[in-house]
Image 1 (cartoon, rainbow, N blue to C red):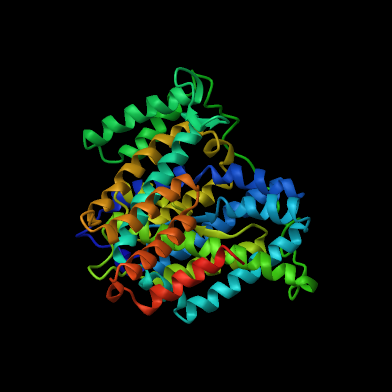
Image 2: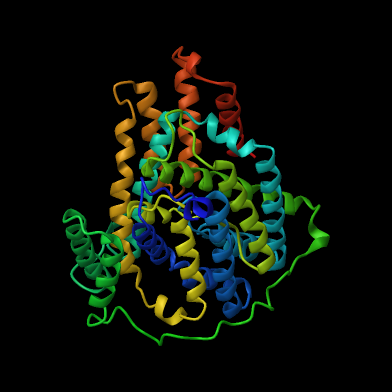
Length: 428
């Protein structure tokens, strides 16, 4: 039954492992339950309704991933995309949040059409194997960087952009303690090391005054204020086209990067660089975005934090099923789940980044035509704070370097087309 429902394989994983992996993925994603309402409410949207919508949309899309795509990935409103929705489209450009939701709905419908026509799969197939391995390593650095920021271990510095925070007190100290504890559990081979690391660090945060429990059970607010709120009269305007295109581009390549990076780490990619159930995963992403817009939230995307569950051993849809169940429970246990501080999940993100770096070993560093594009892809993800920008620059450099050095036989029509589209992105 588990094999039919979730693609579960007893030769690859165990039920207990999948359950622990699903809970771990949820805990590393749970911050979205607090962050998404905070960001989107800046547009005037109801914050309580946003919490409920974030939970329902995330649970729906993740359940779809479990049963349809059978992959161990969690989905939720994407970070960066929600900020673009609120701070750029609404607060900077001056459009209403209803206008932005309409753009997200159109984006989701376009993604469904692109997935049905296999265009998104063809884009993934056009990415060289070297870059696919680089994407995994780049995402590893990216999510480690996010973890270091979440704990306050790395902070803003106007003189040098970033610097080390005060690691002798507060969340940064708790993050460092959690990093040591979780590392020890991993070295000792403790099953569920990442999950236990989060829980132990959360408990240690209580006497430090960082973990604060504001109760356990609460009633979910209604989503009525933001449900099905669209501006149909703006669908065919030039302004809508620009906003939709931006949503499309960022979401497409963030999702591609996440799927490629995490499946590479999980060893789920075949020898030809193909990802199993890729079309289904893309369809889940597209349907999730469409449904999310109807419910009243920004673009739904596959979360890079899914790598934490994969690092825990998750390999099937059972992992994402457990993650979805946790989301549904959080509807009524919001105060409990939201009490887990960012400093407690930060060590997991940092260590999962380490795990994902292993894919860099497959890059041929003796061949500079392969190594340089791979390095550009890897380094730009954390430094530009964008998975999609890393992929774009890696692909452009791969085509240019190999074309101009006479190694054009390595290039395919798909690679040329992708590189050309990416170059146009910077000028349109």
